[in-house]
Length: 304
Image (cartoon, rainbow, N blue to C red; front, top):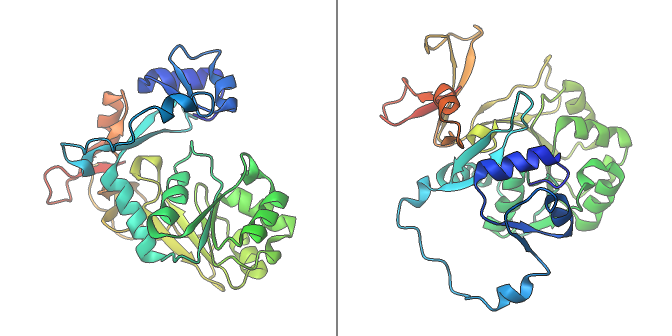
């Protein structure tokens, strides 16, 4: 729950997800107290109550943990009320393992966490470095929109890996401080179409840094395709690339038939990263998450 969200959006999310309690800090408490009818647990003020509790681990899940719900993240709601997307542990772990297999981090790497946790890019920013022993450096709230602060923070923390939405990458490049960030090894972009002009400018200012374009919807565990933007490539647009591990991308017609190369159609996503569906939106889930006619697995689904 982003405290900066409008109160009607926060109220909808609290009601829709069926929360029993909300964990808050000072900022969250100020945002939610006027609208929340459920208990607020304050990180600092309620600490004595936590310290009196049991330190034993929670019991292990009895059912299949891979198919258990990992998180619900709400979409932006640009076409109506925000929809809660239910992603499972197997989907998230596949996404994280693919990223480590493809772009290996070591104990010497430092990953910048700057994406607000209400967006799913934050999932890999948080968990990828922690699962492999790299370092996690957390920017201040709102710092992702301040090029001057980011440049200083990258240099101070010796960041090697970070993410930008393309519009913020362009702003950062125009700010002119990118060349001072000599610790950077790789940079990821997603969330918007990546302009070729931004790719060219990035290679000019950071010739030693890899630039990778990622694509994926919230409905498929963050990202489903990747493309390495290499210097000197010529084209009118940056491709979304090839599918990540255990994922299929199909261009289909209205009858769910595969289309030949060069023919326009609708992108469908298959594989283990397809979400369970939308929380409390069964009819919409059935429309957008459909049976996969191209898979030999009887329970395989596509997101369209």
